Image (cartoon, rainbow, N blue to C red; front, side, top):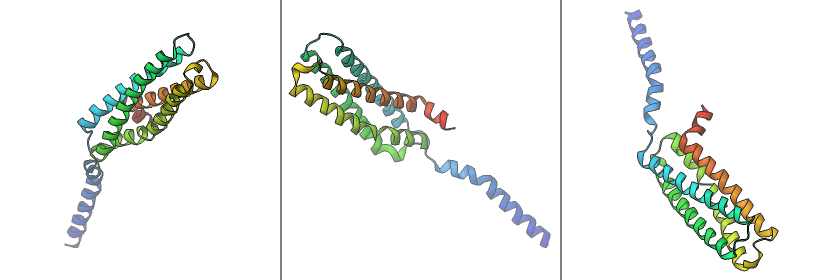
Length: 169
């Protein structure tokens, strides 16, 4: 009798040990379709802003007018604003996402205030100095902005494409 009780206790412990990891996995959220869709939108807006930044950077090596620079900056501002809006929605939906989606959101959202602050400073600089688009100070703004947006786009693309998760594994 005693051996039966011990055997039952061991069996129960074995079942708990075997099922415990499965229970932990079940407690995690699965990928949210809404978050996945929004991440793709964020990637799209980041790609557009990245293209805008590259175009603006090319303008610093040409003789286009300050008005052309201003138009490109406004286009970039629109794309960055869309990116920030979508990222805000992602942040609000974070708890509904899988651990991988939560990680992506956590990596993306802190970068955006840096981009918006720098973009705002660049716009203000151009507004205050429209005839100095070939001066070093403006070109430095453009170059820094292009690097910030390019790195952010690459990080977002990696997150959306799952490369960051694959590297972590």
